[in-house]
Structures are given as structure tokens and as C-alpha cells.
Length: 303
Image (tube, rainbow, N blue to C red; front, side, top):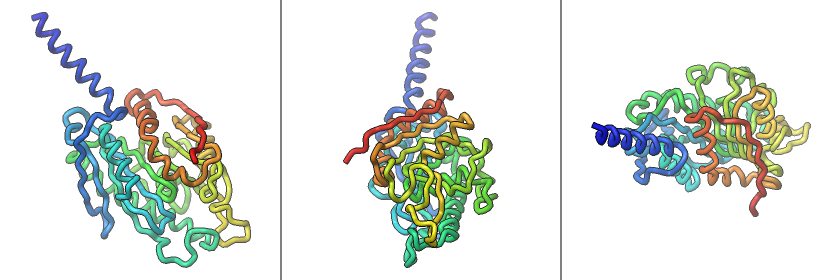
């Protein structure tokens, strides 16, 4: 009888140790990828490890690529590597495409693009995020992910999109869009920003992993105009970058990790994809240990 109990205990401890690794360390090598159409012709790639299904119900990471709202791909090299890495840790990852509303526009998305059109560009991207979640959550049982643990991730334009989806529910331009998805567990933002008119309140104070270079000339690190446009430019629009967002989260006692790349530029919108160990450690503390704190870390920017 004692030997049987010891055997059961050994199995239990082995399972527990294995489960503790999930969401933190890479444990799965076999990753499946399935492409699905979530709205119109817009597609999303679903990455998941079949072996994780018997161990736990996974969080869902929804990834939104960058590209200034006129270019970029859901299945680019960086996006694919990032999704594969997180899926190998036990997450279900959906890398989505969205309407590139600035594609072909002569004003681009810089200082000649009117501020009102910039707001509408952000809004349209949030609508697509909402549509993608509406679609994906219908398959939570099939992919074995937890609909109450949705994480939004994005780079550059994608980061701006996910930040507005998570935090801007009290702003007139974004009100009611994400009403069916008010349980966002966290955001992961590489060189993103919010319209300064958005005030993060306690209800929308979502935990965050933020990465930003101090010398970003496109998306401000702190609070400054988008693309640093002059006040007389059509595209003048004040944005709150990662430093300002972290300050607001701190006031609400909301968990976050804010990594500052000293001297870094907008290239950290891409370099952030390599920080999967740090991201996984934060999400593990947040979702599994439930004791994530507030961390500000400064790192040197690599040439």
C-alpha cells in the first residue's frame, strides 16, 4: 500500500513540476498552425501544441503585426517565430491580419495625415481586433484555451491597436467596440502609444509588458506628438508612449513590466519580439503565481 501511495505521489509531483514549466519555459516541440478566415477576407493563423491539451487550459495570445497601417504581415518572420515560441510554452497564439487602412493613401500616416484620420485608423484596427476575438472565442473548446485569459500583443501600429483596444473603452472614438471583451488579462506592447486624450481608468487598467526605446522618432517614448509633428501640421496628435502608460498603471497599482531601451529608436518595435523569456516570466507571475509586481528596467540599446 505504501509503495502504491509513493508511486501516485511521484506521478503527482512529476505532473505538478511539468505544469509549473508551462507558460514559462519551452516544453513543446510539435507546434501546429492552422489558418482561418475570421471576417471578410481577413485571416488569422492559430498556433498551438497538441501536447498541451491534456495538461492545462491555455491562455490565448492575439498578435497584431506592425507596419504603419499600410504594410506588414500576420505571418512575417518575426511574427511567426514569436508565435511558435509562445506556443512551445503552452499558449495558444492567433496572429491576425487587419484592414490596412492607410495603404495607398498619399498622405501616408505621418504629419500630412489629418489627426482625425489617425483616430479613425486606430478605431478601425480596434474593430478588427473585436471581430477576431468574436470569431476565435467560438473555438475555445476546440483549441482548449481559456476565454477569460486573453492577452493582446502588438508591435508598432499593432501595439497602438491593442493598447486602444485594452485601455480606450472610455474614449468616445472607441466606446462600445470591445464591450463583449472586457476581460483582457494583459497586453504586450512593442513601441506602442495611446492617444493622449485617453485616460486609463481603474476599470481599463490592464496589466502590461511594455518595451520602448527612449529615442523613438515615430512613436514617442513618453508624451509627444505622433511622428513629432509640429502643432501646425495636419497630423499633429499627442500620444502617450510606454513611459506615460507605465506611470498611469503605477497609479492604479496595476502589475506591469516596462523595459526601457536607453538610446533605442523605433527598431525596438521589432527587437521586442526576442524578449519571449522575459514576457513569459511576467505572464507566469501574473497568471499562474498571481503575484506580478511593477518593474521598471533599463537596458542598453544594441546597435
